[in-house]
Image (tube, rainbow, N blue to C red; front, side, top):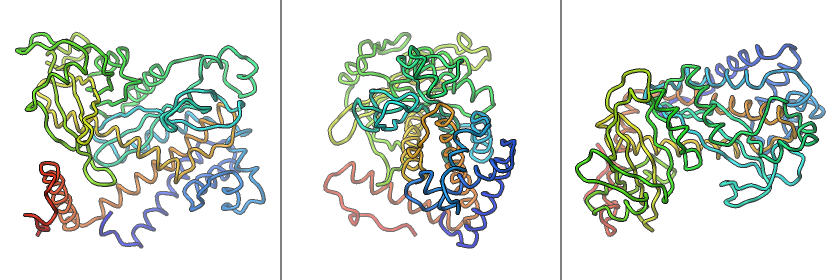
Length: 424
């Protein structure tokens, strides 16, 4: 957002916030609840580090947290309607035909046993098995930005066999146990049914399963799904036959099979890795998709860290002739949801949900999604205000930094001043 005046940014924020609140009001049958929801949104976007009920109430000038708590608890409104509103709102600004639908999960650490879905389970947020809730999220990622467009609380199987816990947490009777991949499949189905424009899907290994692969193929979508080192891969119809586990194939590749590429920009610059791509088979997509889309390729994408040579594996499905760089870009977009989780937790109070009910979790999560989407929309509008000269200067600076990164990657003794100069 270089080159945007403070007055312009303030105007963007005020205008967008008024419009978002106007959309939000339509979801609430009673004006007082709509006003409380608008104050809730203000609290999420405000400067308070913790977005608890008391903190939000103080920011709103309320004597206590009761109005804020009512938004998540006893008031009557549909959290799924807000979810759909957020999806439409985000896609309206961030839409791009080559966008990536990213699905991942995050954990919410808990102390007690009463919060809906809580239990001892593994969460990457803590890197261990601990007492927590798990939320599955879908993010829309394009060159215009990133926003959450779906969410669902994972309900462990032991919750489904304990009616007293379900009743206490107000779990709807229609909710049954579903696995995390099944939740992901439902999110993909909702995105496709809503006409969300995306060409690719990306997930980690939890969601790289056959059912999701077939679902995306039938929809004519490409994907880069996480795979395990022990997964078996076999080629057919290719000049050089390949067979074995993903790790065995990776270890047998010659040095020239690897190429150093960036998976996208991180906080410290380009995320550089060594990448190898093995084409396994070319298939007619008509076998899986009702729409004729021509020849597609199934393959194995391998990422190797530069420092310790650790390997990660991905199963791509893409139109024949797709470049390795395109697949790397698609997989790299998966990092956006990790950054989004961090922002939503540290800045917007995603982890500060004080309710214990099923609907309270989804209401809180949907309101945080709305706040996050608004930030992404404001950022995109601000980028459009940046002058062409400013954008050109920023692009030249990014290319210069990328050149330094490639030079450093190729030679451990290279320094920024050796043979490089600032762009002119």
